[in-house]
Image 1 (cartoon, rainbow, N blue to C red):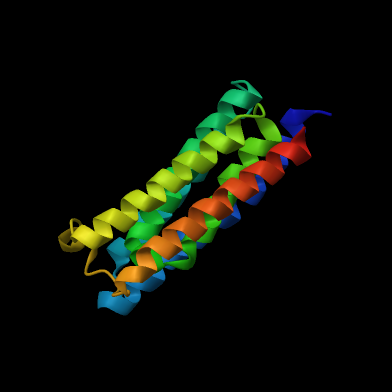
Image 2: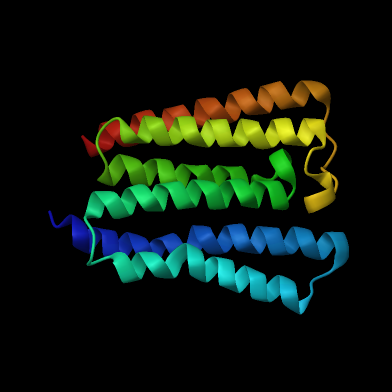
Length: 173
């Protein structure tokens, strides 16, 4: 099995989750204060920065190194998308499944668990920032949620990330 050819296909498929994150952020910003040309330009630049360098590096570095960098960038992009598109109540959190599955398919057997742990930590960090209102001046007020909701949602997300890691690690083995 030629991993480099499969990675090429994955890089093209990866544009869709990145586009989904950017679209969710633009949608949330449009609802908060309307879209400006600057919002659209920044979104296109971020989309390009999150995708194009990986195509340029595809033949220059090893598959594992490129996939590891992709997983890191995707988790960071999704975390930023969650913070900007409605915080922890955002449906963008489901996109954490993508880098976990990517790690399971291309990296060693421990990698999806590490990706799931990092995704869970990033999600819980956004949740804690939401609760403390730490970034409200930067990204706007968070959507209100009942206090008991936070612990339940965080536990469900973390469990889902770990289940996906387990399944992707077993399927790739």
